Image (cartoon, rainbow, N blue to C red; front, side, top):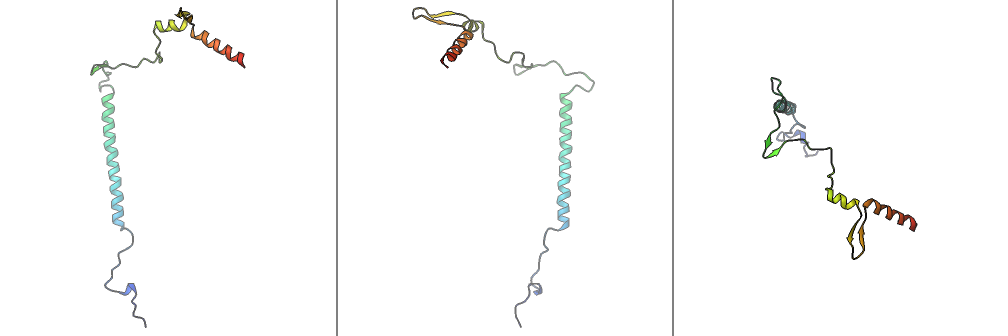
Length: 126
């Protein structure tokens, strides 16, 4: 006969049940769901309040004229001319023939003509 006792037969050893108990799992689940619903209600109330603040007044009047805030006028950005145009003097310098240094014999030619000359030279060297 063996004197080794089986682990289930020792009265001093108590075994904890495996896994989580059902009431704890259900409480955590319902608590999480209740918290999520509460957050959704709070978010809905805040969004409704913001929407009312940004929209027309309850009696149907539209919002007032834009006003100055911290000395910045609230207007839409002008998108008709996204690229700033060159001032007239710079535009003339790009579009006309002129002397750069008469003594050295250096002249400026229009940009368009300069591009044509460069292309002609590139075609001639091929």
